Length: 506
Image (cartoon, rainbow, N blue to C red; front, side, top):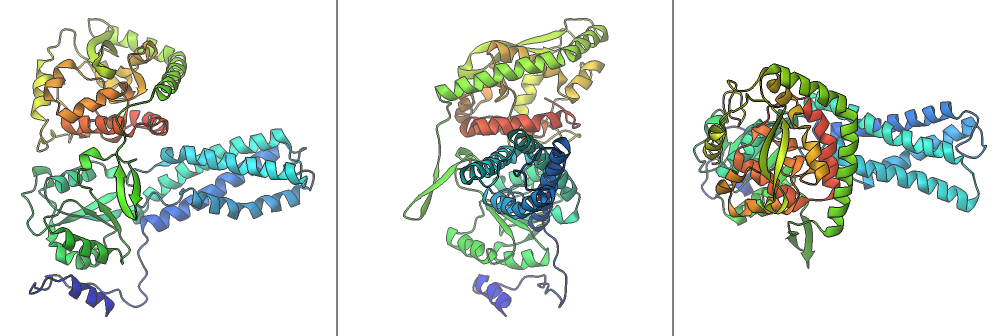
């Protein structure tokens, strides 16, 4: 009865009933497993497994020493088992079980710092309480070993748990987009280009949908916003994205309010979304929420820390991969005549020019005018990808055989580590811009020069050659607005896995 009243309240006066009847769950029908339910349980199991493995390994490494001050192995194991619920509660408070359902791009890399912090706090509190009250005197070496193994074990177990969960049908989120305008279709295209999100775009809901792009022509129009509750029930929808519908604000508030009573994730694209970053702070005045937009700049102290990390990280990487770079240099030289390195003038922080280094992947003397013309063509939001579903200029006639393999794994960019050490670039940052690209920039795109250019960054990790030139610039601006050391660490941790995916670089 309450469900029927919801539908009635959502009808406009005089509006006809939806063409498809509402499906009622049968008595005793098993509820479908959803992403949140699945991942939460998988991560709890992963945490327990990682901690148990760390405890067992520590006991094997230090059989003669006690973690709990001579109370005996059996009692020690019992005390450890009793602390496991405390870990689960603490991890819940840290938000380590609740992000996957709402964030499509959430991964283990995004929570490494939280896991590190939680393991450190729990172990430190354990030691401090033991020392203060004199109840037990744990061996410091054994406790430090447990801390390290617990950190590695929990992270590894969470990686495995998410990998298994993503293979389960319950991880897939059936999604509809309310609003079939330019913004709604942009979101739809991004969802379809990232199957790893496991978001199944069912269709659009709009009273007056705009003509669909060519690459969204097969996406159905499911109905009007007034029918959204019926659509959610009928199609077993898990996620609803509200993207600038033509409906009045008051009407959309009613629809969103009705959806909140159902088991569905609701995402709302904010007005002025171009100026809002994912880490925008939400604060308020007497309960009125406000979005805080921080300046696109890095403080002097943060720049010093970032520079220090760049020098240490790039130096270590160069030492480790020096043999690989030598082999690549020999292969490039033998594959085609010309220099080993490709040198090109690029623009870094504050639009300062520098010479960027890459392993040469094209034949020597290749004309770069076609690339400039191609960027102009794909700048518009209605630009279509090529047959490989990539926004990349196909120049297979001038790319060498070795160069093709280097580009596939981004190995051609390894010499840029020298640019990082010289201070031209950072490990993480926007793609270094080519001077002639500035004529294609919108005014807000120049914000990207407020941070150092990078070897890898938000665009490379999130989209790479799946985005138009304009969308890539927007991601660079987003990085500049969202910069933090935590963001740099997350992007750096996610980069190695991307190098082994079969994606083309631009």
